[in-house]
Amino acid sequence: MQNPLARLKALASRPLPSAIGLGALSALALPPVHAVPILLIAFPALLALIGAAGGWRRAAWLGFAFAWGHHAVGLYWVTHALLTDLAKWWWLVPFAAPGLAIPVALTGALPALAAWFAPPGWRRVLAFSGVWVLGEIIRGFLFTGFPWNLLGTVWAFHPLPLQPAAVIGTHGLSLLTVFLACLPALRDWRWMAAGVAVLAGWMGYGAWRLTLPEPPAPGVMLVMVQANVAQDVKWQQDQRLPIFQRYLDLTALAASTARQANPDAPIAVIWPETASPFLLAEDAEARRYVADALPPNSQLLAGSIRAEWAADGRLDRVFNSLVGVSPRAEVTEVFDKAHLVPFGEFMPLGGLIPIRMVMGGRDFSAGPGPRSLAPGGLPPFSPLICYEVIFPGQVVGATRPAWLLNITNDAWFGLSAGPFQHLASSRLRAVEEGLPMIRAAQTGISAVFDASGRELRRLGLGTTGTLAGWLPGAASPTLFSRWGLLIPGLLSLVVALPAWLGRRRVL
Image (tube, rainbow, N blue to C red):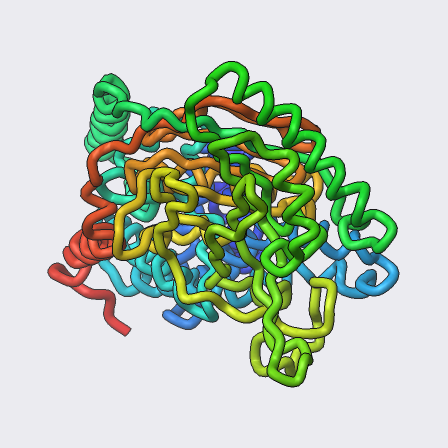
């Protein structure tokens, strides 16, 4: 068997392919696999490659190659969206995930450069860890923002390790994760012992926080409808009425049962993103059918396309929206999605790249951004449509709500890792903000998380049904909810700073 030194020499002989392979290996730590110990191999080996790089340019390429491998594997599931119209997009299948990984991986060069310029040893580890997380933060804004595959999400298999996110956010969890993963590169038992102590304190804090009293519930019943409509039939003309009827039937049965069990409690019925095949905000007849399915003292919160017409009657703008409907068939509230998906909901670069994944021939328009809604007297909530939920520190408006509502259509991504990764982001937003997260997904995974990220109820991927239960209570505002990305951003700078207080590598 090869000894560790021989294996390192083998990696160094082919540094760029090795970096890609190590990045691909590290993606196994992401949901749903959560093979976190893999990072103890991938990151020290990457640091060894960077240390042996012949110059800063080679170091930057190694960082990019690692990040590209990480994201190409971590985002493989985007290819599934092409399978909904394979006759049209077959040629793009081999390029979708690798191509998307290129711009996402650009920030991977930054921590590699920081590590190369830093002196060997603990300063290099700190420089790499701090700048890695700064790169994650930058990705949340670069090219309209795409903060997917954050390393903090590797811990989303249980609420215990997620609790520090209430203070330092998911990026702070990434900082701890990268730092601990890099410690084997130091080959010093004292640093390993320090890492064990950090991990023990981390888990101890999580255990303590989970013992805190649960906040009082507001007394609102939730009914979440998961109709399990496949994406390839969703917009077929002959399927519109059957799909609508499926939602109505599931709603009527579940809402009636909830009303019988709780005669006086307000009920929020939730349909996922673009659930309605009709324009609910404009279609009075469709709303009358909805009203017939709703019990008294209830509200439907439904995903629906919304349209606006110009004075001459031509279609002016379309929105991906959440629409509130009362038992009297009235529109009680409208929220328009603000953070649109490139290529899926709008064409970047003025449409120079002719790849559009959604039905229809025009871009969606963006709404004004996060805000709190309270239709029909419900406790105020912040709507998050689809991937708006993946942005740490950007899910709540100026007024703090009592809960978060994420409606999404993950049918695009089938039985893949995508819905599990999306679910992990939802769970982390609950912990960061100290607010319950209600997630309604077209084909799953629908779930209810309390303000500490504990999963209370779930409808699995690819199942049809409803979830009913009480809305959990909101906790006190967390430090992260008050200060947002400023906390992990400053922590990352403080961690990286010591690398430049000592001797620098000479060019």
